[in-house]
Length: 501
Ligand code: ZN
Image 1: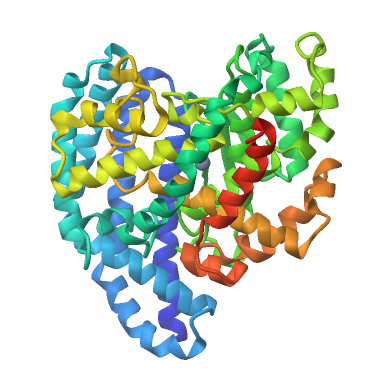
Image 2: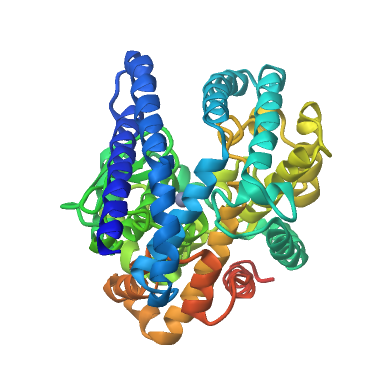
């Protein structure tokens, strides 16, 4: 068995190397590649991805998994080797079920749809994107049927991003949140004039924004010997194995939060990856458990820590040294309120903590209706506008600020959106548990000390890497299933105080 396990690990290591090489090319594409490199790069990426897929779905891998799984079951569910087999088996089954022709068709359709979407968004003309989205939806339905499901067709798509999570679970979670969130958001919005955020729109020199962000993430524990930060149009985190995690940020001269909170957010993702145990290197266990688990880390650092009053007690004087003129009329309190302004907005990525999840619920509901065949692609703009009016009381002036704003549908990422909210809810659940274990955490943050929080996350979450599902992790770490009341309580306390509701 030892020898067979070694052989399996060797094969999986090859797949991991190919994925990392592909990720490096993808990182370069979004950071430094000159525009005319796009065609050659698409071919290189396709080749590497195909090779990785072929190596992985090789029958020999399936045979090894089948032989080793019963043979090593006695080690117990939590053991590294059993977990490796379980996770690899799950990935293998999924990869094997979808015919390569469909993978190729989806990737081609997505490449074309992405081009069309960019154009449609620029022109704010949904009709230009519509035929592509129709094609994508049809292919996603086809893919879901190949992947298989027991209850709901959407389960198959969701499972790609949030393993073992079901549509019914997400619906139940969202329904519960909505009951309290919708009236609370309304009450806060009715008092929105209590907060002035004009300070954020002054002009902030790019290099200073960059330097301040680097100072903050250094302190958070981002290891520049094991990672780097660059600029890209859309910020993201990627990595090529332990010791090389990459984050990107973008800078808006006239909107301070873009770079500042974007940098902290991506650093949260990076710290998770940087905390993946060395023994999982080049195996499917390396990295984060799921997109929801990942988002819990980015949002915990960005919002619960980075947008807290305590954090700015420490950092406002420092930021003031960087920008004395822009912040001359500000103090900790006015700045804290400004960065926590709640305002109904059209664009999800710029939304505040209160309205953000309503943007997600809208997308989840529309996606579900599309996959169920209850909503026609042609009717998406109208359905979108009706929902955002229902949730936020606003109607986008055009589709660029409405249903054309996100990249996800053009890339065929159906099933993705809800993980943003699941991660947000989990972040508050983690914070509750962390502060129960370590009651001095808030005081540490007021002093700009993050080491103990990071250590707590390392021990409780990061060290498990991909071994467990989001719900398993929630139970293991917090003693409860994934739930929303911690987040709701956090939200109401924080924004209730700011807005006096
Ligand atoms: Zn994120």
